[in-house]
Figure 1 (cartoon, helix red, strand yellow):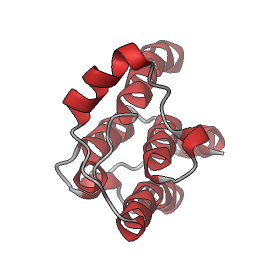
Figure 2 (tube, rainbow, N blue to C red):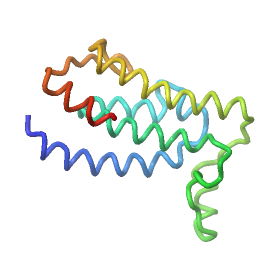
Figure 3 (cartoon, rainbow, N blue to C red):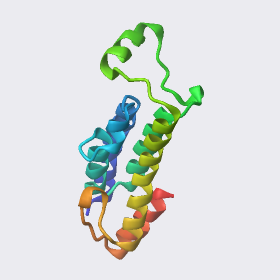
Figure 4 (cartoon, rainbow, N blue to C red):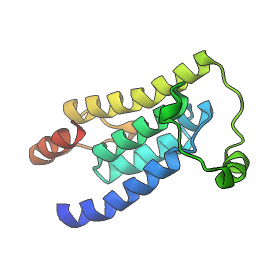
Length: 141
């Protein structure tokens, strides 16, 4: 395949998905098979970009931490938009932990599946070549 051209295009998509992940702030956003995180990860695996999957999942996991330094920076003029589009319900610490762990689980599952060739996120089966396996494993680390 044409790795450089694919990487350039998919890198832009990854950047956009990482930005979007800042707003996936409800447990259903990250725990539902139809949620935006799972859908984004499926697409990233189709693009052979587990590095992007990892970046998106880790960014999304930050939404469910109590460390305010990791929260998205919202200026006062943006706050009303943020409140409007997120409509984030109050979630307790246990729900935050479950949601955060769901983000990590997607990364671990993708890494396992890539390294052992067992399939992928959402049942997407992909058998990388030996060369692709090495390149992608390096990208995930």
